[in-house]
Image (cartoon, rainbow, N blue to C red):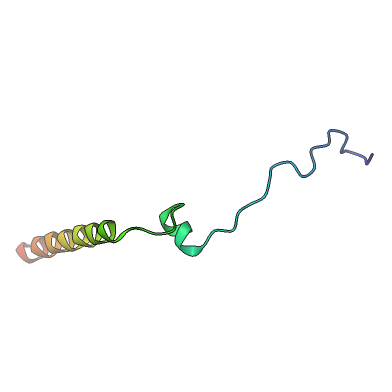
Length: 58
């Protein structure tokens, strides 16, 4: 038995999984389906249009 390790906790905690870049960015599934992507794009375009209209009024 080594000094300071009488509890036997060395190595407890499991291992880390290596995740793909897509999985890190959009959750465990690794990617979004096309409808969700299109909805997000439409929301961004609508928001941009609103900002541009507000800027032109000022």
